[in-house]
Amino acid sequence: MATDLTAALDQHFGFTAFRGMQEEVIRHVMNRHHALVIMPTGEGKSLCYQLPALLGEGVALVVSPLIALMKDQVDGLQRKGIPATMINSTLSPAEQSDRLRDLAEGRF
Image 1 (cartoon, rainbow, N blue to C red):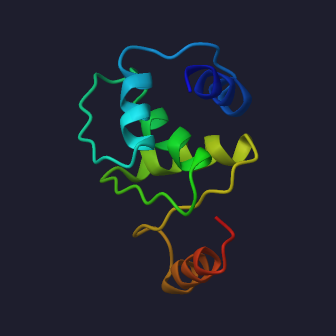
Image 2 (cartoon, rainbow, N blue to C red; image 1 turned 90 degrees about the vertical axis):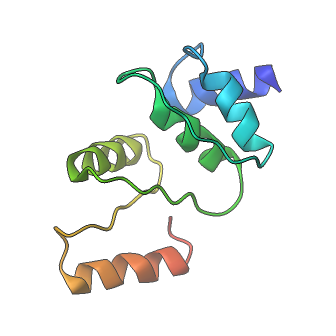
């Protein structure tokens, strides 16, 4: 599975190696276990849920208190051609409904 994960890392994110505990966390999540991951800023926490979400079935729901981080993450995924969206207080009720409908229809 290491080769598969590394190949997926390169394919989707352009990285050839994992940092720190990323691979261990990703394996844990891929084995359908819960995880609480605490890492320093810049250590690559986002990859710990983004890569399993891409490789697994269904939708990954990420809860974040930081709107700027949500926007940055969604923009980055979209630039890579990965369908992603966010719902937060900056969106009108109509925009939120549209995104929830798109989610229910499998667009993300």
